[in-house]
Length: 148
Image (cartoon, rainbow, N blue to C red; front, side, top):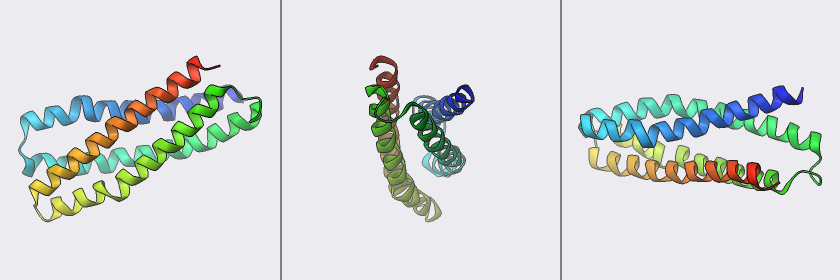
C-alpha cells in the first residue's frame, strides 16, 4: 500500500511543481512576446482557471497521502526532512490560497472590465508569487531528499 500512496503523493507534487515551472518559465514569456494584453490576459485567466483546478486536486492528494505516509512512519520517527517538507508544503498551500483568493480574483475582474493595466499588474503579481512557490517546492524536495 505504501508504494501506491507514495506514487500518488509524488504525482501530485509533480503536477503542481511542473505546472508552475511551465507557466512562469515557458507559457507566460511566450505569451508576452506574441500577444497584446487584450488577448494575453483573457488567455491567462482561462489557463489559470484550468491549472488551479489541478492545483486544488493536487493539494487534496498531497494532504491525504502525506498524512497517510506520516501516520505509517509515526510523526516522532519521521526524518527531519519530512517535517521540513510538511512545513514548506503547508506554506505553499497558504500561498496558493492567497494567489487564488486575491490577485487571481482581481485579475478576473480586471479582464472582465477590460482594464488591461490592472490585469497586467495582477498577472505580474501572480507570476511573482508562483515563482516563490516554485522555489519553495524545490526546497521541499531538497529537504526530503537530503535531510534524513
